[in-house]
Length: 346
Ligand code: 5GP
Image 1: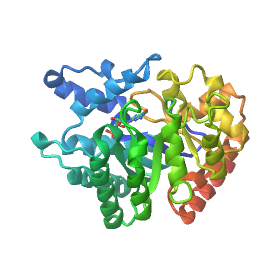
Image 2 (image 1 turned 90 degrees about the vertical axis):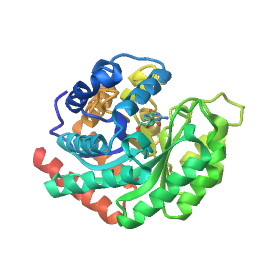
Image 3 (image 1 turned 120 degrees about the horizontal axis):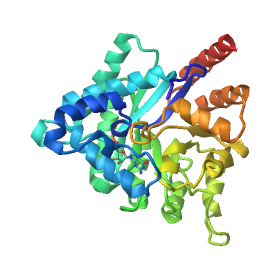
Image 4 (image 1 turned 180 degrees about the vertical axis):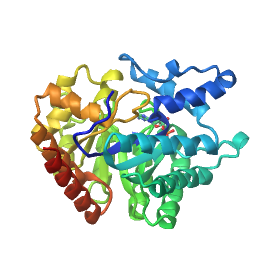
C-alpha cells in the first residue's frame, strides 16, 4: 500500500500490539523465531476469518512483545508509520502487561510507551500522540481498577499525554455491566472512555453501560457494529436513542470488521449508516498490522464504495476532529492544519 499523500487525518482506534509495521515485525520475529515457533505469516489476516481467529493472533503477538525493549521499539515504529501515512493526531491504546520473567511491570510498560512518544517528539515527527490505557475484559474487574489507577497516575505525571482508558478484549468473555462502577470512577477522575461495545450483538450489556454512563462520562464507542442491528419490539431501540441523544462517536474499523466477518461487505458497513444520520463516526484501523491496512486505505475504501469525492472527504475528516479526547485548542489546531494542507494540495 502506498502511503497517503493527499489527506491529513487522525487515528483514534489503534491497539499497540496489533498495529505493528510488517518490516519491524519481520525483523523481530527473525530474531525470536526459534524461541516461539511463530512466523510472520501467522500474525496477520489476509482473508475473512471468524472473530476468534483475530484473538488467537493477538495471543501470539503477546508472546513476541514481552520485553521493555520490544515495547519501546514497537511504539516508536507504530507512531512513525502512522506519521508517514500523514496521520497528524494519534490516540494509541494498549494493555499494560506484567511479565515477571522479563522484568516488565505495568508501570515500566507505561513508562516505556511514554518514553517512545517523547523520543518521537524529539525526533521531530509531525504527529501528536496521546495514550489510552486498555482494560482487557478477560482480566476482570480487579485488574480494571488497577488500570484506572495507573491511567490516572500517568495522566497526572505526563500532564495529559495519557488521557483515557480503552475497554476491549474478547467480547465473548464476561459482561461489560460488571465494569460500570470502574467506568464511572475513571470518568470521575477525569479520564475519557473508549469502550468496545456491540462488536458482536450484546444489546443487554450495551444498554446497561449506556444507561449508567451517558451524561456522566465522555465516551466513544469502539466498533459499535451491532448498535443499530436489533430485532424490532425487543426493547433495544433505546440503545440507538441514547447514542444519538448523547452524540456518542462511533469508531468504525472497516477492514477489521470485514476480515473478522462481523460485517459482510463494505456497502453494508455501519460507517454509512451513521454518516447518513449525520452522526459522528470515525474511520480507524484497529490493528493495521493484523488487518494489513493503513488509515489512508480506510479512506480510499469508503471513497470508492460510497462514491465520495475529495471535498466530501476533507469536510468529513474536518468534522471528525471534534471527537478526539484532547481539548478545543488542539482540535482547532488540527482543523486549521488540515484546511491549509487541503488548500495547498488542491
Ligand atoms: P494491546 O492492548 O496488547 O496493545 O493490543 C492487543 C489487545 O487489544 C488484544 O489482546 C485485545 O485485548 C485488544 N484488541 C485488539 N483488537 C481488538 C478488537 O478488534 N476487538 C476487541 N474487542 N479487542 C481488541
